[in-house]
Length: 210
Ligand SMILES: *Cc1c(COP(=O)(O)O)cnc(C)c1O
Image (tube, rainbow, N blue to C red):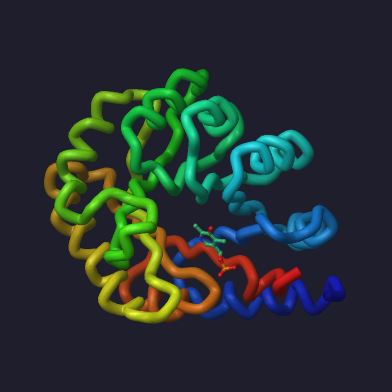
């Protein structure tokens, strides 16, 4: 893809997402494409593997590196040290481990909720959100700023995103910082925006399938 095509694709998403924020998911793309967007003024990138996040955060410390994938406890140190934000928090032991490696700041966190009903998907169950928030509240290094969810590939995005919004609305009275809704990927971010997403994570629609 040429630089100008990449920038057009990025701008197309930006100009259709209202006030939401965009995390450009760079997990499959080249450093060259990241550099193109950085030069165009984009700062927020998402990585799904802790080692890749660490490597890119060291290479491009001026950018914001968002951790969006599953996390094993033994890789938690990379997230504590290098992530700007952690979107896929759904395990209390991993959260404690991440917290051990945070120095001099609080790490903003989204709690990942399984809103698609697929058993193989990551995330806590919608009914367990309040209990999980109560446990996370004790980890002072983490600041929960919202909920994150993914719709099933096959569809049902509207119902799934509306469920995440209901979970957020149910939590916000007790946990006023839990305001954000991080939802929507390449094939469903428009629906996510309609359902109130405050942040979307888009990869292939910007970077292509390379
Ligand atoms: C890969 C990934 C995305 C982006 O997916 P696209 O369909 O390429 O936009 C978003 N969120 C998570 C958690 C991902 O792993």
